[in-house]
Image 1 (cartoon, rainbow, N blue to C red):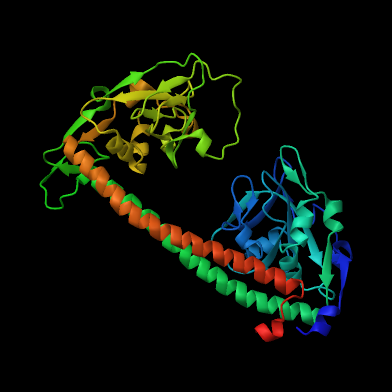
Image 2: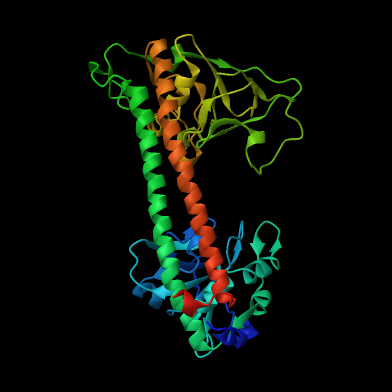
Length: 424
């Protein structure tokens, strides 16, 4: 794009660039509860809160059947107006095959651009680029949800050069963004493989040991399968005792229990949750104690406390006996298969409301290698996972750079700062 081309065009309010305006009924179908639903690709919206995946804002596909069902035209633009956290503003619908489509509840307003005046692809790229995006987000109001009014959306000002210039920019971005997305997708697959390898290393070490030639025997426990012949197995009731000691001041370090990170100090996590006026009466736990989030045990929310602290009175705290190395137990209980096992001993009507009480946990069988072998297993896991973590960190940095490149490229192209003709 030449400097003269960049000078051509004006900033116009969005409402003047549409064939049909902001009307909830145009692109939305009501379910039995009167809520708006829209079919989009699984990768583009997170269930259940319809948060927008920032890297996919311009890549929503709908099937031919969905186009008919929801009255969607190729090139229609959707504004995600409300979410728990506003991650984005608009997504463009394109006709195309999509084997992963499903229904998401989301607060959507649809518009149909006047294609004689603006290219829908160019409009979508511009709406998700700085400074238009940040200006739009700044108009949002937040109570329990972040919401942008239709009037504010209609008043958005966008750059509108000649249509052929818009199409040239959109074609360039389609090609470059697709290339960057392919690179990002490849890096994400590397992360997925690293995560799977990490799980496999830990699972093999804690259930089979480190000697691949060791003689195995059937443990008689389905979730364990075969274990080294010299290992023991034991019910948790003979390996732990419940600790129910309460804080008198509530001033100890508050610990949180997650299925992702195990037991960690709350001060190290970015959590936004209700806090009681006082922590008096919270349960004390010592370093090395096993803490289980009673309500979320079925998801794997358990682990060994790294420091002395307090946890919710609703959690259960267990002191390991002398036959167990706490770090080994931490690796065992955080196996996904172990979370599935404790579900068998949990109580509740719905799967999402199962609770693991002490009497249930004490029924679970665990492997008990010799103590020196437990410590060797933990050391092996630390060595091997540290190598994977180094690769993961480097890969995540690359993904961050690619996303930054993507955003910068779009912003430069749709504001006329990039000579697309020269870049192409």
